[in-house]
Length: 382
Ligand code: PHE
Image (cartoon, rainbow, N blue to C red; front, top):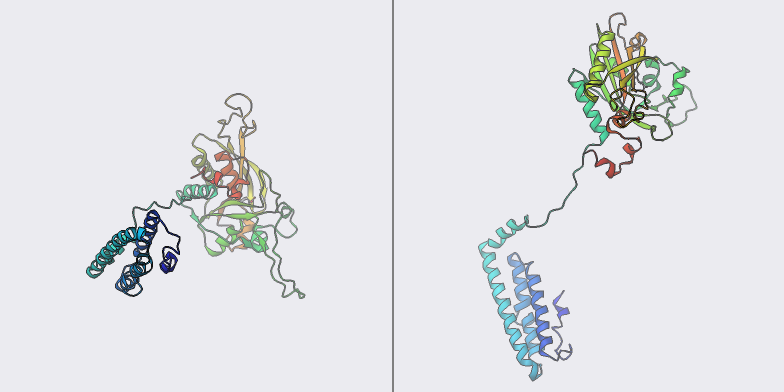
């Protein structure tokens, strides 16, 4: 509030003040105004300005009060105004003098420094975030594979058909391409076939990283590849057009089918607990031969298919086994694409669907919750 708003230019009569109580109230306002402004006075130049505004001979606040309020006051009010003015003057003078001493001795400055961090203020509580459940499961699986000598690599989510399909032994017009309802990127059209850009697509699995890894490194290779993959699926409780996989690849001179099943069994027991059993069934992938589908004995009913309270287990639907993921021994044809000698090396690969695994382990019945970012869900997995 500038001092002009305080009515200092007017007489008390003009301000319609007729009683001592009103005078007291006016002075209370003035004093509060003084105290408020006084907070902002920290150095010598601010102090001088402030002193002149209040104590200046010609037009300081106290002079104005004397001239405009006290002198023209009615005899009934004069006494009250005089008393209040004296009190205010004493307050103003003593405060201003005290601040001068403080500024001169530098204590004001050090007090300011001290007060810059006000430890008595209530703090701002910022909620601490946590890793998304999918990240936690990635981490868990990575740790398991770290412990047996795998390392992590990551690759592009936008791929060429060569890496996503051809080099994985899936030629154009191979029927398995139909299963992978693929998202192709819209590229600028070209009239000339020769300059037409290479088509690009969102990778439908993490398997392209098998090829990229083997192109870069000579055997032995032992990697896992966590990442996002995309397929043109309609969203429902178990489908999403984006989901997560961890690819695994181990290639060396003497890797056997036993190494393969032993590794998978180790992983599954670490992840679900030591009492689960694994089994595999024949399957088909163009880039593995033989190919298998791994199952785990249902960790929820102990592989009995029966619910604890009677009836069938709701997780495995009474089957006692749960389908986990696809895998197999690397098809020798794939080695041809990366200049490995198929006669000398062998290996295995697997592709674990993370969302499905997380749903199983943590009892989640709708894959969509992973993508909705509802904090009520996220908070349950701190
Ligand atoms: N890429 C396959 C899929 O997404 C899974 C897989 C990976 C199978 C590695 C065998 C070996 O379905």
